[in-house]
Image (tube, rainbow, N blue to C red; front, side, top):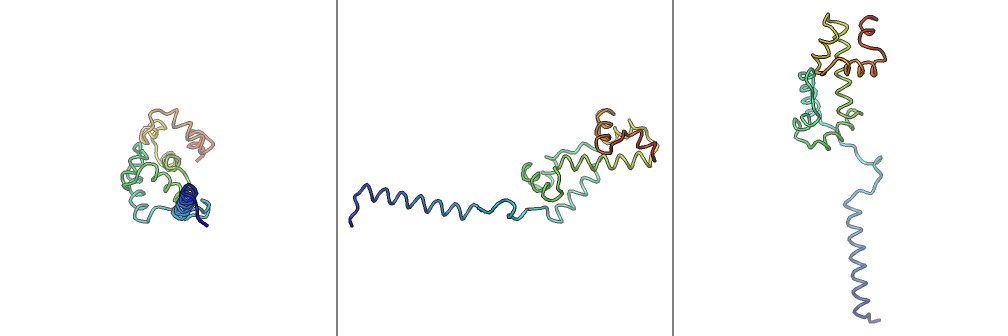
Length: 146
């Protein structure tokens, strides 16, 4: 059967669309996200970041600075961080800072204001609110209970 010029063009166009769709389905994984391999930090990246955080915990750390440390974009770093640690970088850093604060409250004679300042909090009120939200008691009661 001989096809007209318009039919042949439509057929070629549809064939090209189908091939393009197949190509992109092959290139772009169509598996659900739960089946995809989750990218995490390598041991070297974790060690470099853990060392940097441990030595700079008393400073105001920014996610962008940690991303630069590992030569990653901010968004990609945040995604890999969440895959590795199960929390956002900001939430994890806050947890580490508050855990360190609890140790300082237990082992030092510094005032609560001094500890808040040492950990980079601009005021004691923010420190107290975050501490209370995390531990369920204010820093003063935490110290008294020990």
